[in-house]
Figure (spheres, rainbow, N blue to C red):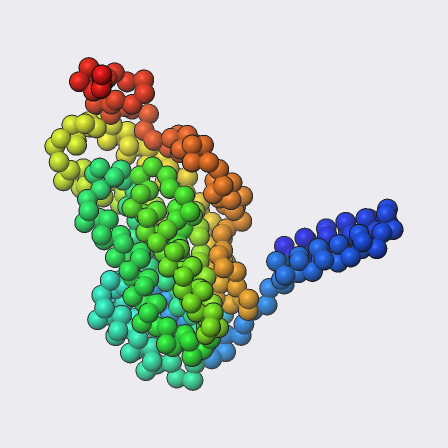
Length: 354
């Protein structure tokens, strides 16, 4: 990217100087070139020698894949797994080098997180803890009225407080290495679609935490980075799991709320969510590449967004809310709720203030 932009800048500079012969144009062109070099520096990678990385959520998905990638790069990897005795963790250990350690980590459990710190300290050897990758996360995609407060609490405990808990526990080791914290957030933390409220709230909080930590850690030369992917085909987007979650939530929803929506609307919602999940991107290596860059770039970016999403994400970020509301309305069920009073629906006299 840097080479491409720089080539264009130099080319424009040459043409401009040739046409005008202006010293001012040449100076402006030189400034442009310098800005390009600052904004798009050539990638330089740190050496993996004597460097260790702790990753949470390595049972499957992004965490599992980045653990494998960094192991191949020569890092000592501490792979935090929620279920260390299950197939995902066992297979990870069997297929990686002896440098990879499986650790039992539940990011919601203070005792297990403290135990992970103790294990890492005892097994670092001559290595330094170069990076912590806060990857563990959960999701629920459901409408707010049948998403219980307990579900909101659960998603915050993992996606927000889990990140805070792990980060604070390992920061002393990271400071010693002038290392970095890499937090896997989401583009859902930048804008919110229908049925994404709980998930988007948690990821927005994760981004806010990362923004504050990034500024606070500059005095220690510790970098803080966010990875912000769109929706990819990982266990989080499995339709069977999401449908089961929604059906359980629906069954526990108060009768008056269920009557307001109706079973027909709920069924249409499930079908709609299934359709959205089928659009999840399959090339998860786009995200794994960015996670690797965040760990290994000498000068990492503040945030990494997959190139396939960055244009759309940038546009959505700056569009007025009225416009994005209309765009996101496309992703709502086309079946009206049983008792709808939205525009175009019927309103009784009792609903009108005279």
